[in-house]
Length: 314
Length: 230
Image (tube, rainbow over the protein chains, first blue to last red):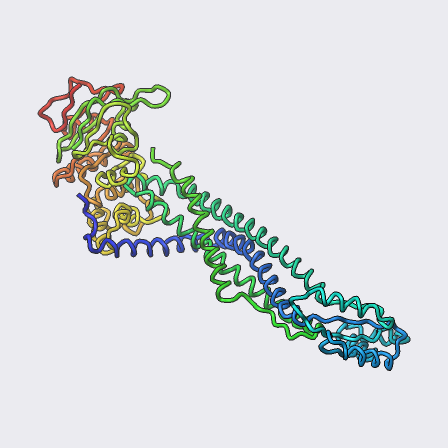
């Protein structure tokens, strides 16, 4: 009884129909540019936040990755220690079998560096003397099997009467790692919550869309449209919301990164680092878009499943 | 084509719209359903289109027992029926052509085929020149004809019409009824519900008469196109 297309063209017809609905729902969205762009923007903002945090975390992790191998001990000498005495200490310590290398930063060098990098250059001219101490930077021999050795060395160095303060840089690296671990989980939590928000936004938008197109749904049901047929344009609409929101989120993230790149490079320079801000990789970008599309589809799927059955012709 | 066997329909709340209705509409025949509003005409049509389900009794449509049709299968039954409503049920956000094309789009016809079939259907109702118009700009009679074109565009085996002339003046009404007769002549079974008894008498057709959900016996004759039995 079915007078539809020939059987061998059914599959093609199916794909043509899907392509048509895909484009049709896009057309439907572009006919309501204001509400569409607002929904898009909300989704994009909700996704930009976790994406940006992820990026920040990634950069910080990358930045600190090289640090545990270059663990250094800074020895701040007492202010009244002369350069000569410091040099003697340096020579003595160089013989220490747990020290790889050691270098000296004189008061003048320290001041020059501070002037150049801190931005207080002009103000420093008004200081009467040089308040900075001589610093010895010690590179210990790292024995990863015996991490307590470095603490022993630290105590030993701190015991020297010329040394006011011995600071092990690795300690704050360790703390940083612990903090990053926490930040990682916070980002996951925020990301999940905002993902849920995207789900609700899309779901609610689709629900309104279903209500607005109530008569269309009713008529379609009356003339024999299957539920799948009626569902399809809404699912594709959700997909487009997700896709465009994801794309916009990528754009926002990249734009923010671009704006931050210059000040961060300056900051990196202050730390004598050639640190380069890394953006979203190709993998990150595709994950962002895929997640966003998935959320859009899932949100519309939930809304459609919940509200489409309520509309029956009477 | 249609066979009602002792069909009753009780709505939630106890209102009984149809009581033990039995009738038969043979394939390729045209039948009228009359009665005052509230007599159960619309309910009867809704049962055929599976918009409602009967409380008791069985309906056989084109050899298929409708009580065996699951909700998932309902769309495929409806694709064999063309339904025409009193209030047209047109979509005002798209032109006439797109309205008429809907059943074909739903059934996955190819673009070229849709074009030729929609034009043929519009031609049959005399609206070929209006295909690009918005339905809202058309008169009541024209809108009804767009609704009819949409109902016949996929060449269904059965046409159902619920008060198709409800809002039209007598002259237009007659035209619409003649249109249905033409479809019937090419083999489509037609069932029209109308309270306009004068119009039906004017056409000279026999009708199945409903009152308070029952079929009135005195108007039934078994030889006619439409036959009923209590």
